[in-house]
Image (cartoon, rainbow, N blue to C red; front, side, top):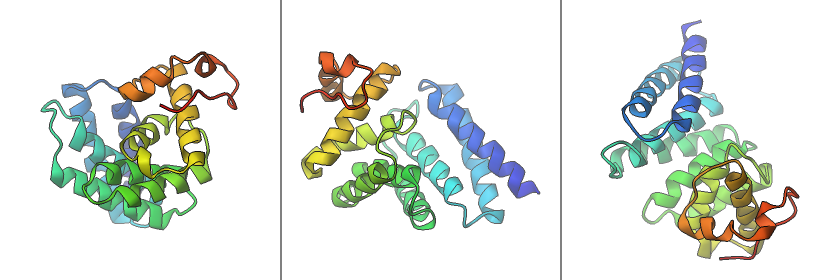
Length: 192
């Protein structure tokens, strides 16, 4: 029973933390999410959703804490959790997105990131929730993406922009294209 409670609390804290701006409140929620998710794994070690949430939590801790420097230890932990999530939930777009975001920042893991991003897009082509993570990963490994993946990343950048997400400068510029403002999900701007 405690594992189920920890799972629910951890997943909720992780979602809420991801929506907060960088700062002490976000760091506190990330810490609570990590503690609850880690506790939940003692009872739900085979739960891909918990591993995916832990990967994203650790990624956010590694890359967006108030100290504003990337923690190699937390990034490695995010990569490990992302790999476990993808193994446990091979059909989950979120699991592969979490692996892609961590791998795209890890030296020597760009191809792994591209493969994970491709599997994430294959599972769910457009997702407002996953857009910030997938678009960020896509921007870092753009040269390794095929045309289909690039098209999906651009369309998702438009989706994210319409939802108010902050994007990397290259995508922010692309999203100024009038085609991006169109509510038609098949409309996408030209490549950067």
